[in-house]
Image (cartoon, rainbow, N blue to C red; front, side):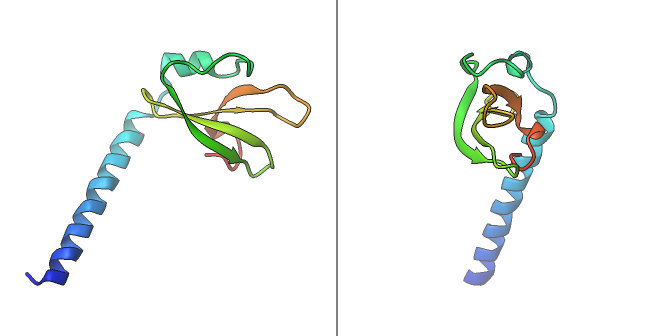
Length: 101
């Protein structure tokens, strides 16, 4: 096997490994864990549950600003955002916000 063929093979194997892990994590993350179910629709002053890890800030397609968290147990994205500028912050499932998922 030539060096360039070996690099292509190694790259393809790494991509397949990554895609396999991604598919496995998405399959295992199909349902919300109990902690996330309890977090959804709570007011923004309620702190994130212990398994939520802050991932950054996002701007949704509707122009909203949100703080994104990812659950280490179920893998779902949970956002802390407001429905509109004058509304209080609430915890929402990332799939519920257009442009945020």
